[in-house]
Amino acid sequence: MFKFNRKIHKAVSDFEMVEVTETDGVRSMHLGSPTIQSSMKVKDPYALVLAYSWGAMSSLLFKPDASKLLLVGLGGGSIAKYVWKFCPQIQQTVVELNPQVIQVARSHFYVPDDDERLQIIEGDGIAYLQQHPGQCDWLMMDAFGSNSLPPDFCTQAFFDDCAEALTPNGLFTINLWGSDKKFDIYMQRMEQTFDQRVLMMPTGKPGNIIVFGFNAELPIPDLATLRKRAQEAMQTHNINFPDLIDRLQGANPNNGKEFQLGG
Image 1 (cartoon, helix red, strand yellow):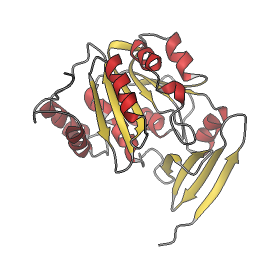
Image 2 (cartoon, helix red, strand yellow; image 1 turned 90 degrees about the horizontal axis):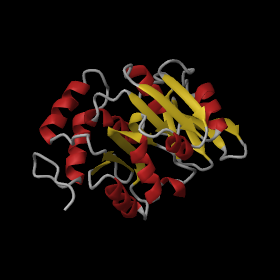
Image 3 (cartoon, helix red, strand yellow; image 1 turned 30 degrees about the vertical axis):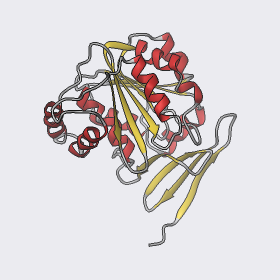
Image 4 (cartoon, one colour; image 1 turned 180 degrees about the vertical axis):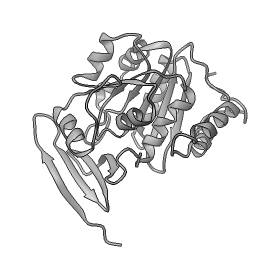
């Protein structure tokens, strides 16, 4: 079936060009390339469209008591909107470097205005987390450029800063390209930062991989606990969490009951 892809917005600034396209009722944001950064169903703007965002929200299975989220990278605001709509217990701060992204997220993707549970800050995400140590119990990195993760967002020092920004029982979540040639290097750095307490979740073939890092005082649930939480979470979230747990189990060493990390 022929799909009509029409451009509905284009903004050029000192940062990457922000483009918005729409195809068959799905609106997408692009940053300087055809790569889709974020997508939204126009008739269901709070639903999560892209598979990576489902994986990112499975963070709730590891940290069901999360109350303070720091999200670095706004994009079209899919995750920020979802948390605002469906996770009222969470206060979130979103840091986005490109002011055009913030403007377009609000004008074309229905990102709500700031309130007591949502604050969007224009600024440098790395500087922000360095200036606010120990203040969030869930930190999510979703800061892709036009084609890849910015180099400053994958150094050893950066991952160490991420751990420092978390509470002792905090969870780190990052969205990576599975095809990135340096993926294994990034994993090794995260394993060093989080003392081998790292899990990865493929969300498609090929596609994005969500990586979770557990600070020292956050227990890693066994598979039975995760599956129980997945079933419970589906009562309030339209996300196939059991399938994501299958993907998680298939991608990480385990004995069928618990993950076996390090060594």
